[in-house]
Image 1 (tube, rainbow, N blue to C red):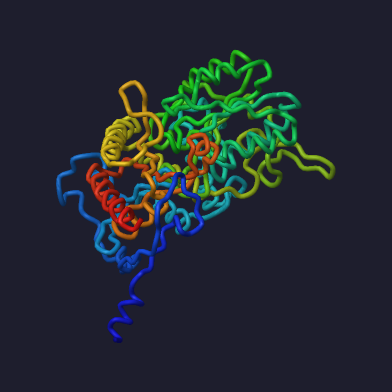
Image 2 (cartoon, one colour):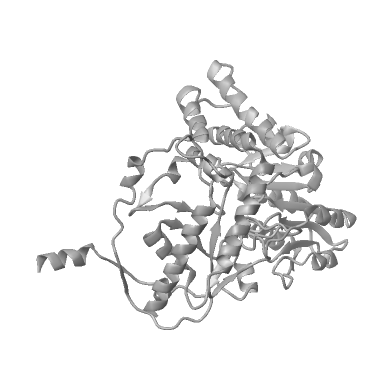
Length: 472
């Protein structure tokens, strides 16, 4: 009797998400309560697993070569080796980056720019060296064009408030696509409400990519700025930024590019793209959270008002007014995220050691393998274009399974197979509504992932579908 009671306490009663007041993207049949085995040692096992040596077995891919640098990946949950496929939300961090952060706080923690002592000088040197690394990484004309921000969201808000509020008026138009991340939409909604500017949205083609011909048709002398992603975090598609910039320039419109899903995965040359503004986040490119950057053409940045007021962004302060520093200091009020910026610089060193073209080529192969493998699973619907030689597709797939809620899939994959994917609207509700759904599951890969992990994911997904289907 006591044994049976103990077993009952030890079991985990799992209620499918479809029964927990979550909207499902399609019809659900049936329902019920599912009993799963409890997860044992979810966190304790991490410290016990030794980091494998590079010489332990021959490396056959970039994923095999690099994963030893990411200690978080070398752990098990309930006997299942962690498969981390949530890189579209955030990437993992190599030991090289963690050491850079530790060194800063351990050996030369100090505020930057105005101190004359040795610690401050070293911190300032490392912080500004990180800015130069970012500039070189995206081929900016000058490191003064790189503004450190809290994240890409803050970078977009900086442009919206500092440039948008000063340059937009009643009747002006802001062109976006329905596939934009909320961070690229909501700030411009604020600006629209304050200025009377009008938001215009570009829809999708039958291939489920933003319609560039429609975008061109929306451009007019009323268009003042075009806000577009480089690579979609849901569809995996890549937009022709150079073409968009050329068309926008013909009507005198500025272009802002959300490059959060491209800068970590492929070579990005801001001078070649030609956009007026480009934003990216450190945490998606193997760097720390809490820092991102804005690239802006220097002449535009120099014409913009400050975003925040305080220390560092001033030239002189009087009782009734202040004068402002030149960019980038003008837009970096207060003590910045010093350690995080230094960590971003270390992440760039790490990525550059392998080369972004090599990373891109490997991820193209890995992404195509993910897509084809997922396509072979019955009742799976993948969103966005198929990979091809002419059309780049990022190494991610957003998908749904007929009659199963995506969060149920994500939860069972995690609990039973150690596979981490994401479910929800991925900060793209307008896009999901356009696709006729409210949520999707998403598997997103990085260069430290492998085809073997894709196989584990697909096997786990098939088991999960069978398991959940049997409960309906």
